[in-house]
Image 1 (cartoon, rainbow, N blue to C red):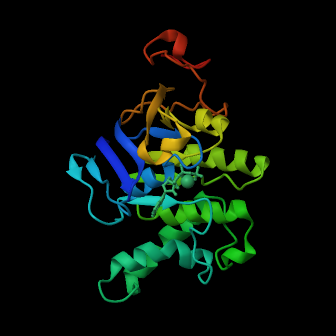
Image 2: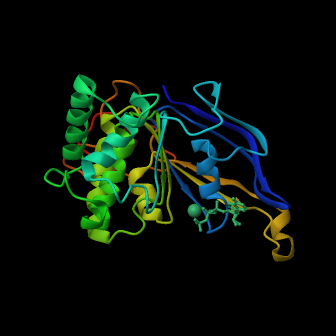
Length: 276
Ligand SMILES: Nc1ncnc2c1ncn2[C@@H]1O[C@H](COP(=O)(O)OP(=O)(O)OP(=O)(O)O)[C@@H](O)[C@H]1O
Ligand SMILES: [Mg+2]
């Protein structure tokens, strides 16, 4: 399970109210895309889910428990850039989380534990399409390859929740389409709940089961600091998957059919060729 419950959350920096009264329940295994104007607090919201920032008011629960005060291995994160460490190889980057969590005193694993971790890292590197690049450094990789590496680095910790802050925003359209296909597969093959910030509506509606928009409801320029953004739209595209439920992505089709307002048990909401 990996349900997130955000209850009446506010975030203020000094006099500036960034977010006001945000309440949102994200079902286990959902894929939520978060959209909204620049500066409305999307990254701030994601940092609160990560545990890097605390809400000024309100609570955030993961599976009924208050979020720990700091980032933990149950929450992985990929940023638009700089998620990977430039001085580590591809394998080193993917192994890092395991090494840091494997030993209390040293960032090293030994013996069988290390062999297992290296096997797992190599498997994930293959999963994200980076086989052959194991010994390379990030500077020797393209932007798309670096983001694939960042995904593998996050996934080795088997996070319950994957947080993505415009992870594909800097990629060329062709590369972006490839990585979308990869992202869908990874999400489908794991139990993760995903929350992804994006500026790209097409990306939001292609990948997500639900699209949530943040906006300042009262946007008076002279009072910008006094009002925060909150949820103004919440659109369900697909219900979240249940454990053992069939894939919402049929193998021969790239992306879910957008069916706003239709329920999964409504035959009209089923993609072609798939039984409801
Ligand atoms: N640590 C901080 N201290 C003070 N103000 C901050 C801090 N972090 C963010 N802010 C402010 O909070 C507001 C929201 O910032 P945030 O980065 O969350 O927006 P965003 O929606 O992610 O924007 P973008 O789409 O441009 O990435 C901005 O006005 C920003 O200046
Ligand atoms: Mg941002």
